Length: 112
Length: 109
Image (tube, rainbow over the protein chains, first blue to last red):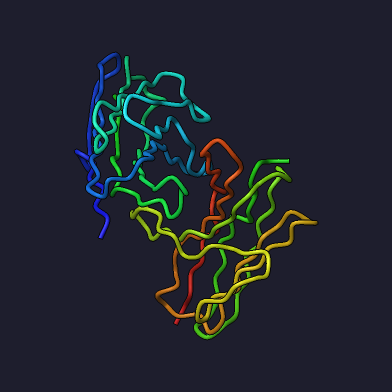
């Protein structure tokens, strides 16, 4: 069974802090994704990666960066956290066919 | 037209009812289509893929109409456990999936 683990379920940070969200998968999937989910806006793609050291911008990359140094780990970085980045963050993985996408449990991030 | 558009609901139906959700998409070059299910405070999970010929999985039937650019999900004989948010998902190109905002279904006893 695919296991996608996000480092924290709940996280509270302050405005201006640098925030790291980690995602680790154990299925050797090539593709990894970071989404955020907000009420009324649904799931929106921030960044994705289809190989180690490769990254592509999603629909809302502003204010975020990512790192994929190892195949199993995909990190989302908030360079200088702002209150509008308070959200539920979901990591997902997939084979090159992109289906199905397996999601982690999510990290509910609050920026104060 | 939004990339992927769904009726947000909520849909409140009694047990045993048949309920249908529709979803429209704007990119005629979209390649693949899916329905995901998301329970409250849980992550989305793939419910079923949607094929051009239509496909069925038990009480669930998915259909695709490329000419009109919409997909549908039909749930027959609704169970309490079907209560969830149903997400329409479209795969266009460049590895990108686009998720609809979801339709909330509540099945009542």
